[in-house]
Amino acid sequence: MIAASQLYCCNYLSNFPVQITGIQSTGQRIIVTDSQESVHFVRYRKAENQLVIFCDDTTPRYVTTCCVLDYNTVAVGDKFGSVSIVGLYSGYNLAYYAIPAISWSSNLMFLSRCRQR
Image (cartoon, rainbow, N blue to C red; front, side, top):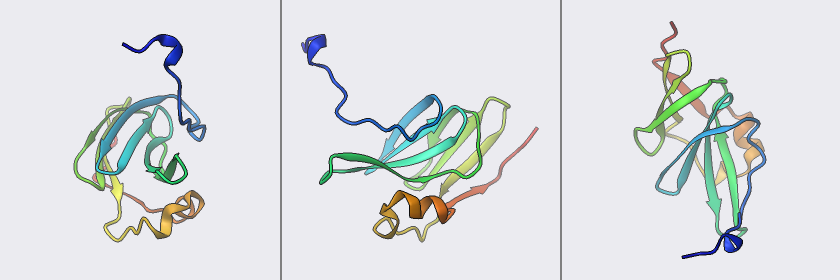
């Protein structure tokens, strides 16, 4: 058993503006949902010992639940009862978009079948 004094956070992301509501993983990707800013795709860089947000959703959603559909796609539900399918384009090249500023400005997220009440 590990003592409480031995537990520590080895990596911290301060880029999330609001409360994190869910964390899921698929392969090398970590999908983080936020209570006001929707979905963020995160990757761990082993060489730098860093977690990097390489892509995020451009539409703000108050996400309450998230389900990973495949490697590039997640389904999210928000507090208003809407269901959205959000993911990366199939032509997404992680080597090129490894710098977060590039992927944020390139609008790599897509949205389909969004139902609003």
